[in-house]
Length: 303
Ligand code: MG
Ligand code: MG
Ligand code: MG
Image (tube, rainbow, N blue to C red):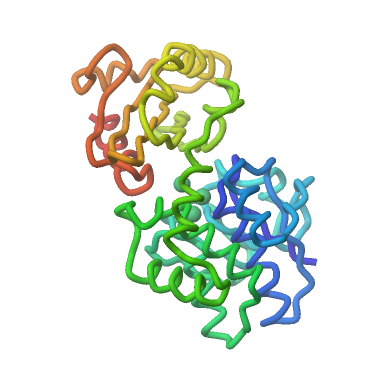
């Protein structure tokens, strides 16, 4: 049995890619597979699963001693427990190459596109695997989510092409679907401060220390203005409790493409000259952590 699993604090792509890759491996390769997740799904992912008529993947236990396909990450800091004792047999990802290593030759599909599901769509075409309506909805939802409805600088022509083809297969109006998805994506109602920080938090090794960068996506800053102080306190607590040198949170307004970056920790001093006010800086035209915020942060942190 091959376990197919995405990153920690799963977003829609890591859930949908695991589900789709597991089915693709069954259909294209006759493999026995199971899609798993490293946590509960967000409201946005629940919306996509509901539209697809698909259940959320079960939460994994350990991958030790198992064959695994990794989807939507290759960083050990985002990997499931037991990864050192697992056999990584395949990867589908669209991030910079991380630090996982393998014991044996593997199959790796890593493309610089906006979403892992865009790669999976192309793998279906490559291997002549028919795409069902529910698989199409899963891939379409992930692509619209990861590319922020095609607005992110991570979005490529391959992502747009895949989304258009998938919308056709699913019988979905692409524009209406994107509007609905962006509404669910930016809905923060009922979420605690801690869950806002954890929602899309990624841990990165840096100078042999650990930093985390999270992201919440909103439709307007009024949604978060009265939460900023509490979010800062939560970031500060994370640094103290988890031994982090920096805990940062991108509060991204997807309507205006403006990101407020909140940050706490010892390395805050390295960002101070860019700060608009204490522990907060503003990044205009910034939607993407992967392509914009994190590369910039790495440069500034390195000094
Ligand atoms: Mg992801
Ligand atoms: Mg992704
Ligand atoms: Mg994302």
